[in-house]
Image (cartoon, rainbow, N blue to C red; front, side, top):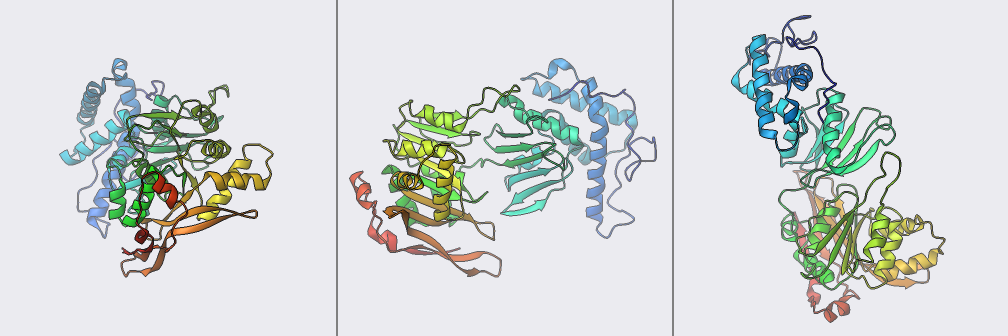
Length: 474
C-alpha cells in the first residue's frame, strides 16, 4: 500500500555520493554509454551502470511521487489514470533536473517505477517471465530465481526495505492477512493463484523474506506430464483408473517436487457430476469440474482470535455431502480427520504430504495423526491408515531439475503390526547423459495390484500388460 507519511520536501532529486552521482549534492546523471574506461566487458559494465542509475533514481523519486500523486487515484479502478500521472511526474522531474537520458533507458525507468508504485515492484518482471518457476527474496537486495530446475541470483532488487514491505502489503491486504513483529509468518496467494510465503523480522534475520511458487499459466495436464517423461502412459492409465475407481491416493514428495501439479492432474479424472470439496491453506488448486466447493483456512486476527484451521474445515466438510475431499496438504492433526473420512464412506479422496519415499510417507501420516492429540494405540493408528489409504504416488525432483514419478505403491494391508506396501511402478535411474540429464527407466514391476478387482467393479479395466511395460527416459 502507498503510505502518505513517507514523504520528504520536494525539490531536485539528488543521489547520495557514489559511482552514479556527480558528487555530494550533484543532480543525478545518466549512466555512462557503452564504452566504459574500466571494464573488460563493455556490455556488462553498461548494463550494471544502468541498473545502478535506475535503482538510485527510484530510491529518491518514490517519496516525491507519493507526496505529489492525487490521493483520489489510489483507489481501485483508477490504475490507468494513476499510471499516466506517474509517467507525467517522472518526465517533469527528468526535465527539471536536465538528465540526458536515452529513450530506451527512460522507458525501462518508467516501467520500473510504475511497477514500484502500482504493481509488485521488481517482482513484476519475474512474475511475467514464464521461464521462472520460483522467486526467492532474501532481504530487499538479494533475489534468487529458479529456472529449468536451477537456482540463480537475479540482477533485480528492491530499492530498500520499505519498498519490499509495501509489496508484501499489496500481496496480503486483499486477502485480509498481515505480517508484523507479533505475527511474522504468513501464507498467501497472488491473483493468478501462485503460492506465497512471507517471513519478516524478527524471525527473518536478513530482512523480509518472500518465497513465491509461481502458478503455471498453462495448466500441466497428465498428457503434458507424459510428454515431459514425468511418468509413462501405462502409469497414467493406471492412475486414471484408480481415481475414477474411487481409490484414496496420497501424493508424497519433497519441496518443489511437483505434488500440487500432480494433484491437479489427477483431479481432472474425477467424473463430472460429483460434488468435490477442496481444502487448502492458500487456495491454489484449479479443478475443471463444475461442482467444486473451495475452502481456505484463516489465520487469527490481530487479537489472536478467529483462526480457522485445516482441521476445522475437514470436520465441517463431512457435513457438506461431499463425494470427494481434496486436501491440498496434510501437515498436522487434520490427518486423523482425513483418515477417518476415508474410512467412513468418503472414498476417492486425494491429498499430498512431504516425504522422500512411500514408506516415509506412511510413517509421516502416522506421526501427523498423533498430532491430533488423541491418545490412540500405535497399532490402531496403523490399522486405520492401512484400511483408508490405497495408493501412494511418490514424486522426486532429480539432480538435473526434472520431476519424475519414482514410485506408485499399493497399500496391501497388515502383517502383524506392519503395514505392507508393494511397488506397482517405479523409476530406476541408469546414469547421466553428457549434458547432465538423468537417464533411467519407468518400469512396471510385473505385479498385478490387489485393487484391480475393485477397479473392475467400477467399470475400469486396466490390461495386465501395463504392469510389465518399461519406458526409457529421457
